[in-house]
Image 1 (tube, rainbow, N blue to C red):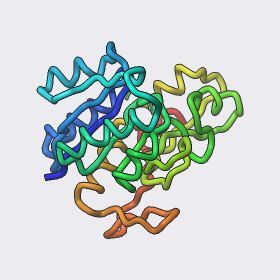
Image 2: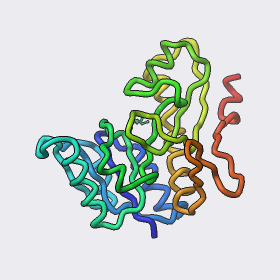
Image 3: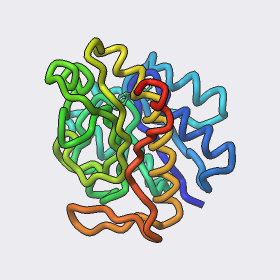
Image 4: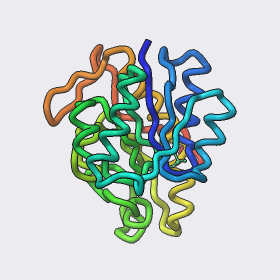
Length: 217
Ligand code: GRF
């Protein structure tokens, strides 16, 4: 069975969404480890509640970024991890981890990449005045939010939206598409074609939940 490691820095609601999906039998996988880089990350409380092993790794204990990621990679290898999920992990992942888990590290970003990468995806979308934003699950490469896209969900942006209101509209869709991406991976349905990720069996990786917005039209 696929073993998953999750890297988080805070709230951990996406971590929770994946755990819930597994517990509901939707994904055949097991979360083998949660790694946090912040001692007080709320994600740890979630891990405890679900009896998921967790580990706090303090970047300050290491002599540089590579050593930090070498340590994490070795902990994951020890546990036979086959997929790494970034879930609100507030760091750019280093080469030692990416080399060890090539095309096996995913991230969720709260905008439709390649638009609005970086730390302020919601605010940047609101400030720019786009009418549609959303969220993206992608494989991780060495830059920020640039790796191959796996699945996206689109949501409307309203003229009076704030960072918070847009974030509140997007988050439920993060919780829906991240488990879908993990399930596709676990079932071996993601095909790496270089820049593009194809989904086997012709399943759609575009999630445009129009029905949820009928009442807003
Ligand atoms: C989410 O909005 C995710 O898209 C971004 O960081 C936030 C993490 O939230 N990368 P949570 O910790 O999963 O609740």
